[in-house]
Length: 313
Image 1: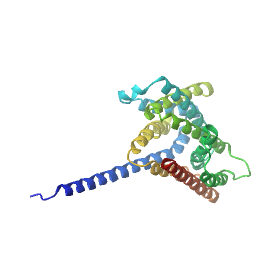
Image 2 (image 1 turned 180 degrees about the vertical axis):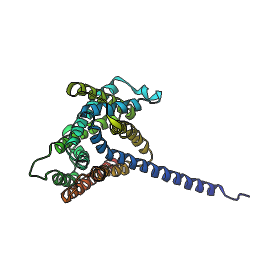
Image 3 (image 1 turned 30 degrees about the vertical axis):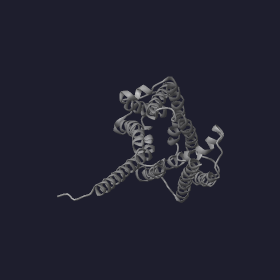
Image 4 (image 1 turned 90 degrees about the vertical axis):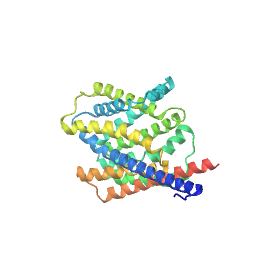
């Protein structure tokens, strides 16, 4: 005979629900950790992909594949396709194309570890884009992380005198442009469907890659297993799957936790570069990487603290 009272039943139901939430949160964070690893590995696959095709051809393949995969949306998602959404997709797609052009070309001339850590500076650039693009004041809390990150970039890149490697400089430009795209898109997403905007963004970036490939390169098919695997991995896993997984994970965990996990991307990039490509990673690079990673984490924490204060006001 069951002698549980209704109060005991409610208590047990509540405990079961909390346990289910914890399990979903853990799975979501494990999913984002896997996605972050995939994004960290993307620098390796950009390098291997560039062995058989040009940078613009690689962009065309990556985002063309991502568009084809993400376009297989439920019919209801396409109902949000309006003229303003199309225009927004064109603008954000163009920004993504320019930033990825800088990154992909830059990866040809620098190490995967440098590319990963320099690209992560996007988090530090965002407050300054908000300031000069949208008039939002730069928070005092961002200045110290910015100084740390700048010093870190110096350790990573200025090995032979006060001059930047062209690849490092291009990756730095890519990080700045990526910050511009993120700030612009964040304002659009207040009134637009994120998934639909991303599908259009993939399509526009892919089309611009095709145009640039025919104008500036001799488009070709990837050669060998490594070439085909690289473009498929970049398009399906790093772009299409990565974005959809992020949207799914955000339902079960906080933006703060996701932000911390994202900071591991350059760490994974450096580990893969050293282990797989046997890239040099000396004391100066280690100090620079630690400074950049610390600056990025502190920058993210400062941003979240300010958002909580604004919400309380």
